[in-house]
Length: 501
Image (cartoon, one colour):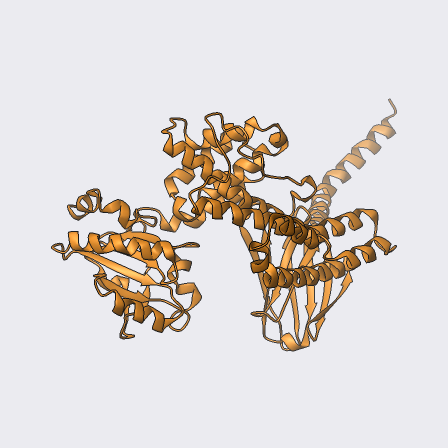
């Protein structure tokens, strides 16, 4: 071998070794710059200009596909010149609600990963520039169309309810015509690609579909309240979901899945009632799952429907932290990689502060003489809280049992019955109490006249429907945020067992 060649290789190798640290440094710098650049590029950015909004807060609310799933809220503040910016990282397309101030401006935005939206608001009217400007301009028009449609619904709802079935169908069909002019405009606009045109027309069509689902839901619950089953069930649960229409094109729209969840509510309740009334041994999750599996139309939607069932079990009187843990575990075994798990676990985390043994959420209210007092002042006593209102029929019905309950425990001074009303009409509440003085216990009022929304019992204890009952232990901890009703407690010794502790 040529010695000169060997010497050359040796010299080059030696020089390369001396360059390695320098090369590594350069590569590291380039890698870091690449990461920083990538990080910047990965962000979705919304730049907002609004002179009349100076000093106001602006927020972007993003909900997952589950209606009760996590809501990520990105906030910013307009500077003195009326400029604000919101930045975040997203991995998929999504709809998000942009809200300025209390109600200064609202619109829904269509966002894609790494997009930049430039929005100018002047006299309440938006102008879009940057990425996705055309589709977001149409999104705003669709929002305005939906608000107009909702006003029509609100104005005609009473007439619709009292109409014949054929007249009702004509009315429901009329809802699908809202936005016809806007739809024609979208179809003729050559600046819109076919991809975005489909998204816009689907979103425009949502109003009529979700309103129909809303009406179906209301009538189903009305039938249940009249002690009629909204679906006729048998031991096989055949046809439990026969009245549910699914629209595959809209599955990924939060407003559609929210309406679907509401529509499924009375059906889930019917199945659960049948489960209870007939002493079915199969656990609730497997029982509902069996009903879903039996309907071939639902084959492609079993995961979604079961996720919505687990979410449904967290609402109102069904809320039970330990049961929710069990249901999520069962769902996760069936769908370990489900995109809905994040939302379900959010529900669980949201209720964690209300589980048994957690410190109570203190409440301040006014008594009939408008003197302020709080629940914490009752520490050392077992406290049974009744959340009610004079306009709530079931609440007033339960008060008859409350009278019996308070009489039964009149010799137990360490048991306090606290009635927290959420009536907005203070005088109506006072008049009701004067007329029903035999309802013994402590009475307090929480409404917007006295209490901020965030400190209302409905907010602190995540109450979306009344009556609701809460039990607080003598040491000030939550026994249950969803206690049994007075009508159930008058016939057992549950309170006695707690008083003995």
